[in-house]
Image 1 (cartoon, helix red, strand yellow):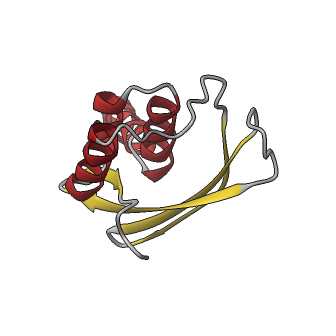
Image 2 (tube, helix red, strand yellow):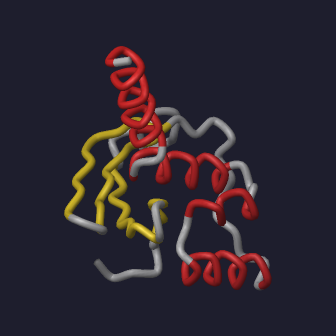
Length: 117
């Protein structure tokens, strides 16, 4: 009985790690870098989704980077807000660090590039 309780806690802990700010940021940029806008929208706020749709409608899109490789530099969580710093270790500017702001919407972390935080 106690072993089952520990196993249950371990599963809850693992699922929490898998849906944190780092994962949301990584998935958002992996999809975005390959032009999979609809999939990227699963990991962003509604206002960021509107920006992506507007950019796509105007025909402006960032250069695709199918070799994108996410490397976490730092993750900071403060309540329902988070900041993730990462580099694209396969990109042209390998020393460039990007910082992303996220907010927790319901129980999911969402990238909010439309924010000024």
